[in-house]
Amino acid sequence: MQRVIEMIFGKPDKSKTFLHIGYWMFIAMYMAVLILAVLQPVHWIIILFAAVLFPLLFRLVYKLNHLILQKINMKVFFIIASAFTFILIIGVSAFLYFYADNVTVNANRQIANGTVTVSIDTLRGSYDVTETGTTGGGIISIPYTASVGEGTITLSAETEDQVLWEQQISESRNGSIQIQGLNVDGTFDIQVAAEEASNISIELRNP
Image 1 (cartoon, one colour):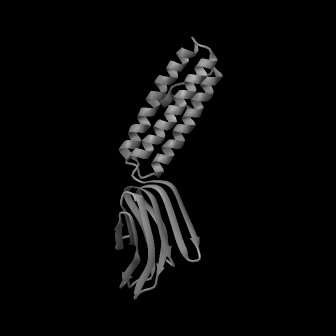
Image 2 (spheres, helix red, strand yellow):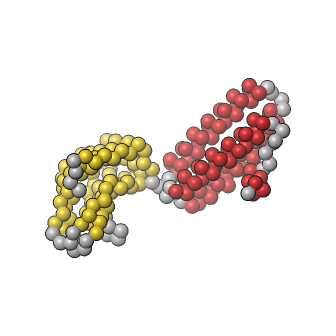
Image 3 (cartoon, one colour):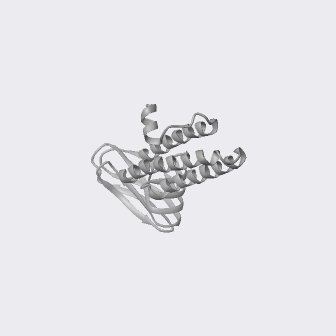
């Protein structure tokens, strides 16, 4: 495993403790970010591009730090290294945010007295509000209140292979999710989706 890591990132400088620790800290962060990216619905080409680019940049910066460390004192080097680490973390976070297909920021869901309440600061993609059971036949009616501060959201009820109901909402709306003639027992999901929207609030009564 270590030979593979050294082949990708280069060999660590064991003569300088700071560089040696920094080397393994970066690799741990790289692995964690890569795993998060894989778990997100990010296109595989973007993941592959980032997986190749970051080790190349790391090798370059690590080599420069090695040369700089030989010529400046530790205090100056620590400031430079800290600034670079901060910029790198911000850069990776921004990369994942802007290129991920599904991003949910600060989502909160509460269930009280049969009412499901969801609030989302920022949504790009889809978010599962709740899952509801069905009994074959009849009409299903679920009252809802939904609002969005910026953008347009789509509130929908879906099974794995069928959209049962959907409604686009630009500002605020009160209504009912009505599904008629569902002849099978099982469950369906109530979801909210958006290309990009913020300050979303949804309330479902007795879903």
